[in-house]
Length: 73
Image 1 (spheres, rainbow, N blue to C red):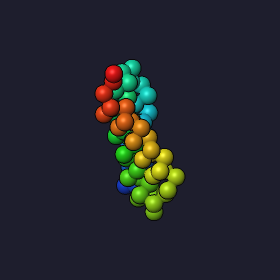
Image 2: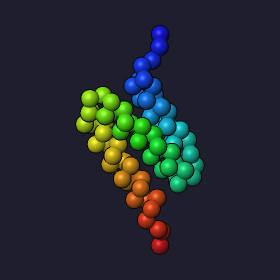
Image 3: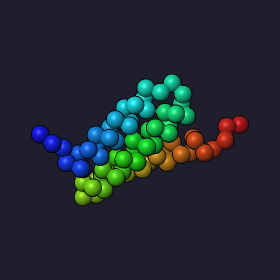
C-alpha cells in the first residue's frame, strides 16, 4: 500500500505540527509549527482548495509570525 503525493504532504504537515509541540523553547515551537502549517496550507490547496484547512493554517502562520517578528519589550 503506497501513499499518494498529496497524502505524503498531509503526513509531513501533521508530523511538523506534532513535533512542534514537543519543543520546550517557544521560539522553536513557533518556527517548526509555522513550517508544519505551511505544509498544511499546501495540502489544503492540493485538496482542491479546502478552505477550512487553508484559512485555519494561514491564521496560525500569521499568529506565529506576529510573535516571532514583534520584538519583546
